[in-house]
Length: 63
Image: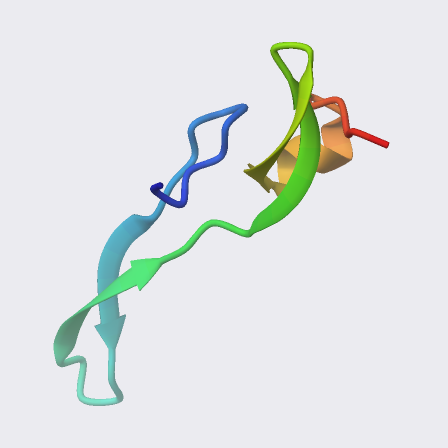
């Protein structure tokens, strides 16, 4: 299972790290994903959701 938000499909972004000498090395910017219990298709499931979707209330958390 890929680390992607189930609500907005946000995943990792790629870029470069820059040192003091401006030498570029590849790096990965991971989204702030949390594994939470959410209601999906009428059942409670554990899934990765980004904190922006959690804060906005875009997913219904299972109790």
